[in-house]
Length: 405
Ligand SMILES: Cc1cc2nc3c(=O)[nH]c(=O)nc-3n(C[C@H](O)[C@H](O)[C@H](O)COP(=O)(O)OP(=O)(O)OC[C@H]3O[C@@H](n4cnc5c(N)ncnc54)[C@H](O)[C@@H]3O)c2cc1C
Image (tube, rainbow, N blue to C red; front, side):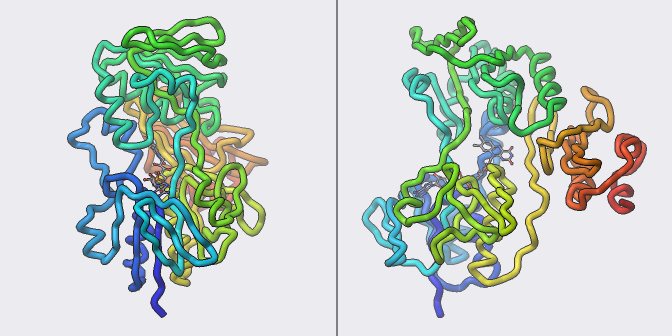
């Protein structure tokens, strides 16, 4: 039987799912619909190379020609606006209707908006798309001042890129430290010190109480009374998922995300979802909500495996990375581990941290030590119990430790 597959959302997960379907033997009709006008591209460079060396930044995942060669119908610049799960059809904004046997939603997420900051007009930005990065780059000239609201990964990567461009940066966050949600204390402090050494000023434990335009600039008043004047402002305060399609299709949603199982199956037959838009609830009840490049790829593979009824390797230990101020920082496993051990010297990269829970290795962070990430993940996957002194000794090869434990 010919199986018609439609994928909505031509980003990281959608583009990789389409290519994997062909690579793994799907011969039926395959349509990839995306509302952006560009061929699918990667977002991690948007806060990094795309601001520093826009001409050299490699963003494209695949070219339109590569999709054509694979017989994938790429429909760009068109939004899917409705799903009829009874009739198994998708309606596009141009009036076209697509019939499917299997539907995959890879619609990603959008930056959460703050009306008070949006009201500042063309000097206030979020960062999710190529166009956002271009607008920020155009205003980020040496000698200008930028205010970044949100000291999460994107805020800190922006702080790194903008200071490198000669922009003076203030970072505001109501939290008590940088990357509070997804890094251990020591890494948050290390990154803060690193940014401060480059001239960044942090304003923690305070939110924004008022925002206004002052000519070409923006004037922020913080809850602690501090006033900041900036030539541009970028805010990154989390993301939300557009629920229009999920509601239309009657998909179960929780915590603002589309609920899927391990195989990325939604609550409706023949409809899958993957990437930033989903909350994955495993059979054992474990929740997985990860907005990362790797997770988008892994969930795309899981959905493809189920569509083609092929087995897929189990999910590895979750992993993501960030690049800031010349440091490549990689994170794996549980960042909320109650105990953290240092291997090496903080501030003297390379170094790394291990997170322990009841003596078992459950998390790891490497700083300019990416080669140690693989053995660290092996230790986490096995919840290895390793003598603390041995774990902290940079003289002991992690590879040996991973083999031995
Ligand atoms: C600036 C930035 C830096 C990042 N850096 C890192 C990093 O260093 N490390 C890391 O691990 N992760 C990073 N990420 C996260 C990573 O890029 C995302 O987790 C990943 O892109 C998610 O993939 P996705 O396919 O779910 O969503 P996306 O890649 O966002 O793709 C979703 C696509 O669907 C489209 N769409 C939505 N609704 C519709 C509709 N109704 N009809 C048609 N199309 C629709 C969207 O416009 C979009 O093009 C970064 C993200 C950003 C924004």
